[in-house]
Image 1 (cartoon, rainbow, N blue to C red):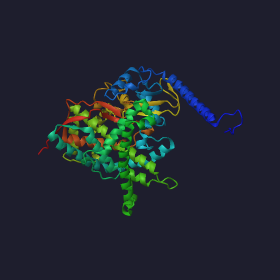
Image 2 (cartoon, rainbow, N blue to C red):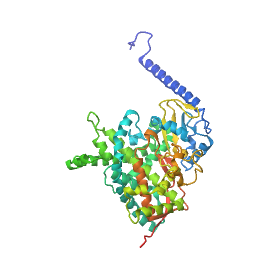
Image 3 (cartoon, rainbow, N blue to C red):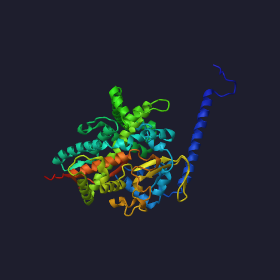
Length: 509
């Protein structure tokens, strides 16, 4: 058959192939030029030697030594140092408060490269959003953490903590030790569901919890994927057994939050319940999401609603569980401070098994111990930012637009140029007399700047309640054979669990 094209003109598929080739050449040249730009910029920052293929990715181990390696580099390279995932994706690990302040005082978005791995889970909620939409959601949700909203939660927190402590009483009759993280996670999940989502949960008494296990799996897989370059490809990851495991965990996590949303939506269809909500001076978190309207009278889309619930279900239980678990570990490790906290708690609570709002401000030494524990073991070990504009740091070194920085909170909280004897547990660092002497960005358990943790007051209240009621009832001891191995997986966990020995304190007759 004769060609319909004029003689001498190429076939259409030749045109298509040529255009694809030109596009591929354009992408490769753009990638190469960008790589050379980043290589020049990062060359100003000395750092650990990198492998010709892996970069520094092989140093991100899951053997409990990862953070120690980074802390060693932080001492060797002042302010910051580059870490490369393969030899093409550099990030600047910031380990000094001056550099952290320079980045966190800006309005840079979260790093799309790092955070895209958790987007299938928590969607584009407050943690991921940037720009005007982030600002709208932040303003919308801030009233959910108002003083008057948080105040009645203290009694709910006390009830949830006491359920956990009652369980421990039965456990230590058979065995001295308790693995904290699992039980504390159930307690904080119970608390956030009751407080923020008006959902009566019995998760602490149900034994194995599918949602808690799903969150653990997702956290592990996101961290594993980030540090293994081949799995950066969605195609490769989704075809792998890890991808199957990830999708299975996602399904469980989303079913859990969807059930919470639908139950509240159904209750709001009842006129009596809706009237109750309308009469509230301050709405709780889920009520805000369900009742919110923009200037055109439109509520949040189902996608936005699901994203915010997934975000706060995770953030409201997992980070707090990490904080409580490591604080109790520190107090077990340093019994002299544990006893001082206990004496203070007894003076405030007496025999009461419930903490009241007014009690929270009467626990200064306990609060100092909580902060010192979070300095050494921050629940969120690091946060990432993608620079939307070039930046020049205090020492004159610069990074271009689009470069990725990781504010390593773990290293900043232990920075030797900021903290005297940073490895020593010393609660007096947080004495009311000391804050003026500290760098504003030397202690970042809740990050800093405009994108700091919106729920930090809720979290601090829960930490105080949990620590106070636990020390009131139990004496804590380190487990002699199970020293926890720290692993950063979205939150700070332990590779081998956090085990403590416990002894119930006998009540005076």
